[in-house]
Image (cartoon, rainbow, N blue to C red; front, side):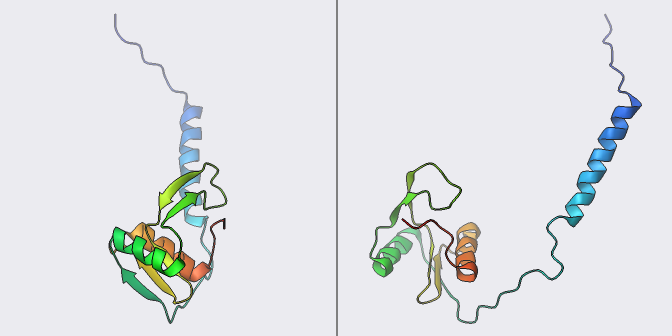
Length: 121
């Protein structure tokens, strides 16, 4: 028995094509600010350390354990424990992070620019 194909209606193609076009065009307009946001950090210092050095430095500077209880961000709901993988020292304006970990270093850079945004215990 030969396989039967189910013909797709012309209207379905029009709707699908219009949807793809709308998504493509909206990607060009969403999130674009006319002038953006600009920050200048004249006294920022960055120190690249490995994981154990970061944890030791964190404990030295803060006097607290490098193992922290989560959630830290306002949107997180489940509790757990995490080890500090990088941090920003507001007093000395210094970022401590692993050299090639762009996610961690970028996160700490946001602290340097925007300030505190974690929940405080």
